[in-house]
Figure 1 (cartoon, rainbow, N blue to C red):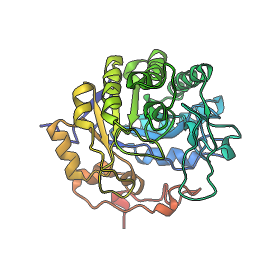
Figure 2 (cartoon, rainbow, N blue to C red):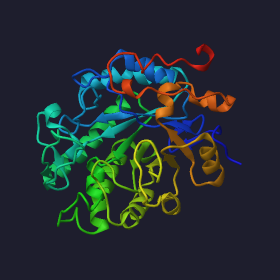
Figure 3 (cartoon, rainbow, N blue to C red):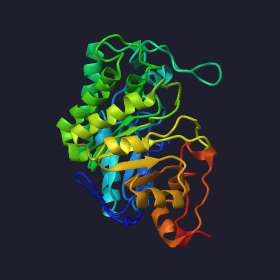
Length: 356
């Protein structure tokens, strides 16, 4: 019977276990979106994960509207990522860069530019003032440029020493804005039918595959429920065919962030699609969101998932796989320091052998 502690191969990437570190926006890069020395320590500490998926990493100035998040579109950024990937590899780990275009969620007070989306919409915000701006509907040239940015950033990731990349197609960001009919009101070949709405995702992934190979390419989707104002009236009609399209491209892995009816970071009553996607996508499937250790073990043993990605648990537990293996207690993270600058709540969580 397969367990969380068994190795797994994702395309060209050999992983020591199936306990993955999910992408986590942490805000410790420089104001110019350049990785810092502090990030070297952070990722090195967590190299025991079977695979580290980095925080969202911008593919362009226009697409990265989060303060102090890193990028992969300049030479300075590429060079600054190299000590991070070297540190993870020296510690025996594997790491892929999550490629992030925020679309209409790229704040103009950060980018200095009008955001881009599938359609001319404005993302909601729970209070005023709303920091988001009305997005510009992408022209065909804009679409081609965004796809160039995904491919160029993927090449940069490999030059920076990453083992591969994951396109961020979830959580209401640009790819998700094309996929869902609640944000995509286009009437051309990129809108309307599910087949058309899948097109931007499929072409973007294909460009990355052409750039670095299918064996080093993954993607993250969030198929059920509303996220950051992005929703769909019939998720199965678009996300199951999307999974089939990804299967045809032969990518290394697909990760799903699936909400449930209870949870501390988003909820929905929309049923999970992982069983249907499991049937449509034959490659390695990674599941994420509110997993307990027991549920993770069960979904691996049943074959529903090939690996499980934990996010917040890795914040306070840099040695999470070791804690799971030893049946040790899992420490609680501090929400107040998720995005604050400096080492507090970032690199100062102790590993098990040094914990008081």
